[in-house]
Image 1 (cartoon, rainbow, N blue to C red):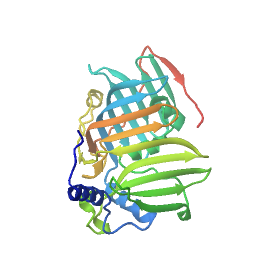
Image 2 (cartoon, rainbow, N blue to C red; image 1 turned 135 degrees about the vertical axis):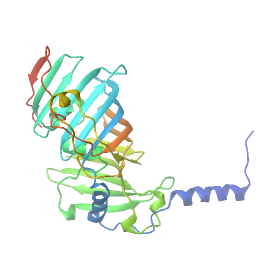
Image 3 (cartoon, rainbow, N blue to C red; image 1 turned 60 degrees about the vertical axis):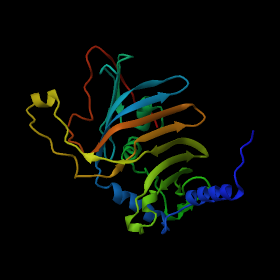
Image 4 (cartoon, rainbow, N blue to C red; image 1 turned 180 degrees about the vertical axis):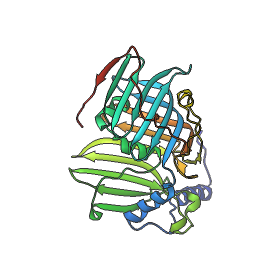
Length: 302
């Protein structure tokens, strides 16, 4: 039996939903430069980040699921350690901006070479340069080189969801990107100088083909932490390490999902804990060749 609602009640409910979902900030950003500058100001205290997360890599020919410890330092230094539920390290990726290394327990192999997008792709399966991955882990958009005339901003107001900014940027070599940002609803009535902007997605295309896209969500404030010294560092006589940046409470994304539509490849990072500006040693972004494994130089071309 169908259930009927009074006409007035149904109309009122509909207007409540529509009016609630079609809201927008009282004052809006009028230029791309102003919006991007806001994000830079909100996150400039974050020089590096570390996280403890769940990692899922999936694709038609390769998949991996595990626990992830990561460390990312601007502009392009990375360390990813994947470990099992028993605490066994399954794979380690390091990149110090010049040298890339990747160790795999399953394949008993160690690859090394220059820090290039194609080498990073061996692990992520996503064509993402180290610089871009570091920026995204910090909640910042990696921006393509462009002229001011090639960048536009608008505010999109979907009927049944909250509004958000759309930034379209054209670049050289027929590359383009679309960024979307949201303003927390509690900031809608604030002046521009007090509004936070959260990066919610990045989409990059070249010559009409989609290279990758990433969605960021569940932002929450993080704090600065002091990293404990490893056994090797203690044996080297290192007594303490300074933090890698100032105190910082900028928000970091709780979830990041990278994908390449049409290929079936995706990578998801779901953070349990994140922190800013940990103490970083000189050993953090390099790794020595483990004993008893096959090594191979990887000089791929982007």
